[in-house]
Length: 76
Image (cartoon, rainbow, N blue to C red; front, side, top):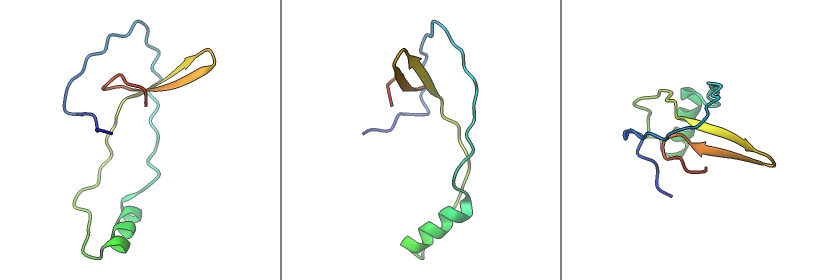
């Protein structure tokens, strides 16, 4: 599975938009991740740790619920 090119601007026309703007807090922090990396390889360390936001649309269609990648427009 290829990762989407997040540096590329993509315009997807929407007929109707009801975005809630929900932001989910990260479930992992830098110290937790550092411990995992050190357990794998003692020489590993985190150089930079930051949160980035990626658009995902949740769509409800009668009996189906979809998650749509906000950059590529493809179903996740």
